Amino acid sequence: MKAKRTSVSCFLLIVSVFVAGTAPSFAQDAATVEKQITEFDVNGLKVIVKRRLSSPTVAAELFFRGGSSNLTPQTAGIETFALNVADEGSKLFPRAVLRKETSRMGTVIGSSSSRDFSVLSLVCTKQNLEPSWKMFADVAINPAFAADDVERVRANILTGLRSKTDSPDASLQELVERTIYAGHPYANDPDGTIENVTRFKAADLAAYHKSLMQTSRLLLVIVGDVDPSVIKERVTAAFGSLPRGDYKAKPLPSLDLSKASLDVQNKSVQTDYVEGSFSAPSIGDPDYYAMRTAVSILQTSVYQEVRVKRNLSYAPDAALGTSAANTAYVYVTSNKPNEAASVMIDAIRDLQNGQVTDEVIKAYANFFLTTYYLGQEANIAQATELARYELVGGGWRRSLQFLDGVRNVKPDEVQAVAKKYMNNIRWTVVGNPADINRSIFVQN
Image (cartoon, rainbow, N blue to C red):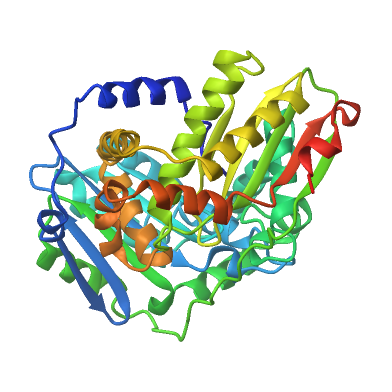
């Protein structure tokens, strides 16, 4: 699923401050950050530890490689289901005990899944790390899969699946994913289907979980004021006897965004919901820095032209994803969808045919610097960032290159990526088909 729609007005305010010459002063250079990070191997399990001195909390995330690539149409949803049940309780810490202890210590154990990976996570205070780690490790390795836990989680997942398209935005997102992921491993939705989730038994979940617990499938990232040598001892004790397995990540094919298209879902709504998806480089691609800048400039332009100047929509947007097989998009909800789409298309053409200045790029680089560090304040966010680059971005060290990469973007590179990627837009619309002029959306 995409991230929550960004606040473009806040974005514009911050950028305007940087254009006026104010820059953040709290950044650390990549070399300094790298010295805080230790990596080691425990029987095939790669572990990354980032030490943040004086941090009062610790975050640990156990990642499972593969995401949708692990699934088939018949097994879609089983990984999410299995991990959601796992974090309910373990052999040593049944649900009632686990809830009592985590509540007493302020510890949080949870799980989530995406199309690129799944994760079992722990956040706790530094002083409660030892007992929290014992619970986390047992949940990871010895989940109980108790019958009542399975049925409770099943009911929650089914409720979510049945209400998945209740809102127009959710309907639009479902249509977007069905359209652009057709024929791709990403078509296997980590949330699964009602049919699958209804069918899975506790034994199926336990067997699938067992297949995941191979060190070749796992990545562990820990961030906090911790001693890497102590962490290594704990990880070895907890995970060192797991089988290595022979998991190898499968190269993901590119998404097929070679042709423009228009898909309209008829739904009675007050305004039409429109999204145009186009290809984008992944976070490990050298083009990503320029594309990140280009999409941010596009976001500003779309907001100014669609909302401020023409009042066609309250919250138009443009954004860039972080998936291994990546996309970017423009979005609007409007009762004048043809006019709004025309304005967004013109904004893309301006990027392709014009050239931004070095001053504008510098302003966006400073903006990224601030928002990056604001977004990385929590240890859990830093752990996820390191893992994302390790799993889909060419290695965790590349995460340290992001800000310098954006700072070094040149105007001609912004124009080049706009020409390279912002084409063959796959438009999806939820609303009244009679409102849509196909010739505006799909142009020769």
